[in-house]
Image (cartoon, rainbow, N blue to C red; front, side, top):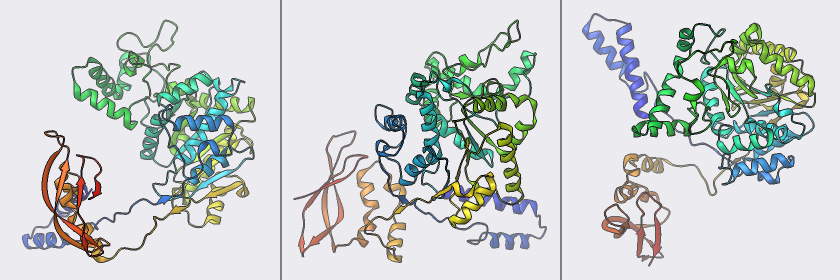
Length: 505
């Protein structure tokens, strides 16, 4: 992080000197001296640890339907792949119970950064889809947008897409929904980065050019499948693990390359598309024409694209399928998620508020079918947050429930002092992260100056497992301690790359 900040500072300095030219060498030198001063171009970063939050009940103990409890508990278990955490935070559990209860309620999640706000809407959406998939009526087979995730910018959309790939694209989740509902959950990103705009052209060359952005994925998949490029295999595995790989992995033999196809006409004699067509086993809808043909269960977009979609005829089928679904099933709820809702202020907020009302009118949703979840770490006044949420979404203020979250402090805890800060800052991170146990130990020697007990210098034997010897011994001078005035002997066993253990002799 510090290297990146220094790189940014240097680039900004270079930009200023090139954009604002000075002819006098002395002025150039003086300006450089001023810009090089600390806190002029950029401030030193403040590092803040994430707050700890109170854990809630286990999924099996929450006030949910039996299907939701069993499904979430399964996904949290080793058998289910540990897709979700085994025990939710209290505010995540509250969001689950609030969103899924029979009486309609809207949620405003106001917990801090890094508190798992994303799970406060993804878990209820998963449980809502799971309940419908397990229903014997078979309504889950009908395609429609059941949840809309609306963001103010594409960067947030792309980040959320990675989360959906890791959650709904996980094999255990895909298999569960296929077993209970006949198909996996379908999700899709519909933004300017979604290939490809417009009507499918008759010219094969033009269509191939519009899908050229997928060439990197296809080539990497083929290289990894060939098995002669270890770096390709490693990169492919890493991208899948991080949710950076499209959800088209039907099987080992039929993945993204099989979906896209190679060579041959894109359409058959009847004009139907032969390549880049959605398969039943797909979780992600990767192209616009896939979503136009069959709407995804989860649609992720930004408010600008949503407005275009509501104006253009080519996306009309998405709204028509969704409207028909909710007309046929009035008991089902449409979930609208507004993540980072505090960004919708001023003229932009007014525009989004009118857009939400137009969306609800377009889908012909009744008040009992329209459910809103908002998240933000910037809401301080909960009453004002309810007023804001009601005005933005056009729903009743009384139905909004704020979920602030409960922070937990480590006990005992207190504020630090200058001496402790100085000792902590003297620890060399490179040495602390070293593979050498002796070097790791040397790096924390400064911390012994702030220990709670009197200390003395004493030689210690350190035993650590290495590649050369399972019990390689070496001596290093560390700081010992006395308890009740008596020097204590101890042997420290330090597994290489592991956790050190202390045994008193």
